[in-house]
Length: 259
Image 1 (tube, rainbow, N blue to C red):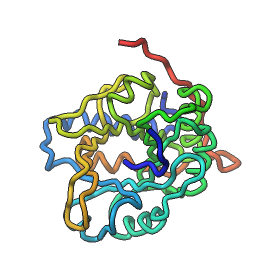
Image 2 (spheres, rainbow, N blue to C red):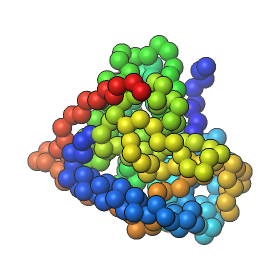
Image 3 (cartoon, one colour):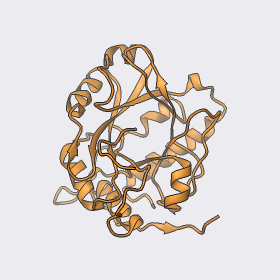
């Protein structure tokens, strides 16, 4: 995925808890499925050239995650148009945030929430964390937990964490229970699962896929399950309290012992 800046749970919402547990169970049962049986997807940002969303869907692409925000103050200029066009073409859609470790976690969550109006039926929000940018704002893991908590409180379902195994095991070594894993790893028959997870939900396996509808190479992803279990990953209708807010409880990162 792309950053715009230059630089060297416990499941709490009832529908989220049972829906995601069922997704992971079905995904585990689908271990014998061939790649052709698993839904294929892409992720995009303004760095990608124009995409023909209708042709993507006709060519077999079934979901997309679209770059929305970066840090506390950047909005991808292509997000709104891509988000609308992907839905109109029939793709399952979601938005992702590029997490900047030198920015406040809660402020980054507020920026994402301000600009990304996910609806029931959309895919959960995604946070892309793949590098350390100094100086780190406060305690890295506490700040990241604050970001995750804010998104779950707003959208009613845990965010998906996008990361690479080497980065996560070196820099994080944290277990954030209940957050689905989107792992990025290329040129391998199967991805390495980082510390804190037992399996992956999404795998970005290439950055050079060019399905029909993509004018240039694009990131290719696969869902670890079948089409029916992918539907279970979608955001449910929110169960709101009297003030319209989804009721949740905060989560703290649970430190794992170094290997």
